[in-house]
Length: 427
Ligand code: EPZ
Image (tube, rainbow, N blue to C red):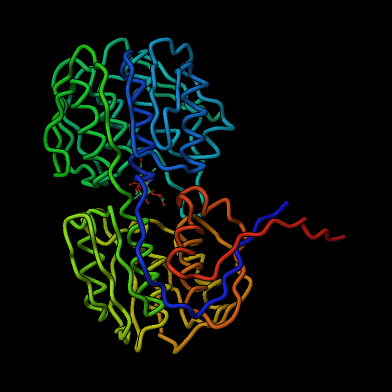
């Protein structure tokens, strides 16, 4: 059976939307639960296929996981008895690689398949491995497996060539139980890194400076139980804000931390959208009378403009009155969705990491296919604003990162439904 979204465009999005827990925090916090032998309670976990994958992986290692209620899990990893991850799980989701540092800290050895590239880029893990080596691990790659071993992890000073989110997180998890102090310089400042540090500190870790360019970790002997609420998903929040902008809508976004969205808010105001910060977790977006102005965007590591909102921003700017330039500096191949947007009447040219978006008065609905998780969201945004019907396939991407997407959009007045149909057989 193949699933597709059918969207009839033209309805301005209006109403209120509640933002779920952050996928990119939930995944790494769940992985970090391996570091404790006590019960760990994690709440506000979004119901996503990626979350199901990391839970499947923790179960495979031997963690006991109980789902207490919607979004709440109790995890006990005392009796973990495996430190080798199967290829089929890691190949499904590269974030499985974020268990490497925790397994190494716990067992002194771990084997995780080298994650392959993905649609948006080759996504190497050299920075992860350089960091673990600096802590005293021997690293080898054999038959596609990353093998790390260390009798003892010893704190060290590590400079990251690029502020990689995953590498920062893997190194933090390994350093938590290392002997001595680790200093990570030029590290990622994403809110999900801060959420991981807060989670680990609540378990007794000693992590300072998360959210800045230098993080210091004083190793401890063990980590104890805790209860943690995952932060709201800034990418989901930004996606709905841009959907309101693209449809001349007016929405209130609840449970979205305004301080995590400053780069987007600033760009949307520059584009002529009215943004009203009701409180630190409630944002009103009013685009009812907006003629979208063209703006230039450069994606950067946080707090710069998020690469994970790049495609949604381009969909929004495809309707601007003028030409915008978007420069993708984080991933090498994150414009594949542009061809699909152009099939809907957008006028976008890409040249290596640049997209030149010549705004058009309107888009027209068409059958399109998602090429990655955030591209799926961008095509939905285009569909909400387009004249006529848009059908989106390859929904597995959307389901990785958006909880109850159709329900939330329907509540905002979008004409959207998901259908299942037998695949068309071609001879
Ligand atoms: C995290 O991926 C997110 N995923 C991504 O979100 C997000 O796009 C990315 O950070 C950047 O913000 C999760 O948190 C699960 P990186 P990560 O390491 O950690 C290069 C989504 O849509 N690099 O910061 O894999 C890499 O090739 C996903 O939710 C190296 O060269 O991203 C890329 O060009 C997509 N060597 C850049 O750094 C390394 O060892 C950023 O990658 C590691 C990374």
